[in-house]
Length: 390
Length: 160
Image 1 (cartoon, each protein chain N blue to C red):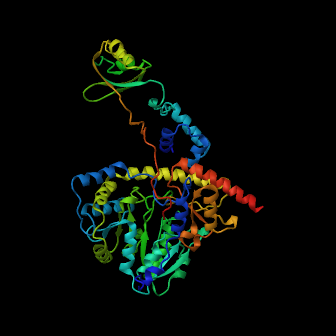
Image 2: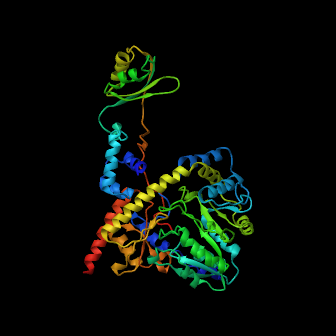
Image 3: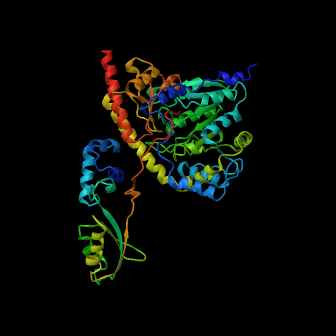
């Protein structure tokens, strides 16, 4: 029989996380710090709205671009929290999670041979999505000494005359890094000068612990060259609802809507009704969760400093990214031994790109009680490794 | 800091000062001072423990009693409320808007003791016009805590 698989799909590597997942699932009493989703359940009033929509028989397709009311609320929200103006009829598309928006956004922009700049460590789907869209990925290896922010020099060095899109993943998974207004202004200058476009993945925008998140679309001259991607998963603890959105120039949204229309039809209707309520009545819930994350973040940073583990202070998302280079082993080795010897699962930094080597992603989407147990084990582990070395 | 401090100790009054300071990103001494202030101002009124008596061998009956009263000249409801809340078996007294005036929570060992309290002590007070007693059959949730449900993490163990 002939091989029915495309070369392209066979060339994609399965996510580095997968392999680790298989080991963890077999271990019974392991504690995990490896989860990339909130530990909170979706606030009840949001769930209730979803249930109510089902009771009322709202079980049909919505328009391709999403419920009009939801698009309106998305625009209200972006105006309210980031002072951004988008037209709900032409510049917003409701998608199946932020993930779909990344995929179709790239597909709508890339011609074969175009280059997409991807700063790493970052979320696992940018590179394969860019590849499937026909682009060549140009990786920027972000540095711990810059707190994993993207510097203008790094960006400038990565740009060629084939560069079309920069992916800007902040607040960042897995590092927890953020980009503040001054950082954005510096890179915006280059972006405008070199005439490239930005896909800004702001799915963690509600979870920052310093200043409020600033979107690059907010920097002068950038809105017309930015595709802003956000969603409900992280802010409202709605991962399973699979709902996100993209906002950008009308022409781009129009082309993305075509792909969305043929591949997806529309985002889940129940989720869309629930999301309307999330945007209307959810600000307080978001703030409560943000406060809880922030307390855990402080707890972890304090614990690291007590055990002498190097870690820059991250101000976004719900991850910390401690450095484990002092132990002289690879991230993967460290994570595997930590799991086998102490029964705690944390994801090796390399799952998010080569520049994650020497780091570990620890998620704090866990209760303080859980984190305390896990940190106690990490302390044992670190102490033992240091003794081994002497 | 005040609001966040309160929201933490409201859920966990046993938390120690050092940890509290870490969670708030503040100095221990400042947290201690703020706590002392909150206690002095009567914002923090006590550090209680939520107990599900159902799970012990100790018998405990709780009743909610709606009380209609005649407010007294010059004192409104305060005087009659005080007469009621001074009984140690009375756990809570609220002034309520709507169909009746005071809501009294009462905890006793037996049904009999509760009915004796209502008929002998409460109903006989001069300004009490009528009472309606509701016995609590089961507590599902108390002080924001769901009593009979263990939290389980149903997430996948590793996700990107």
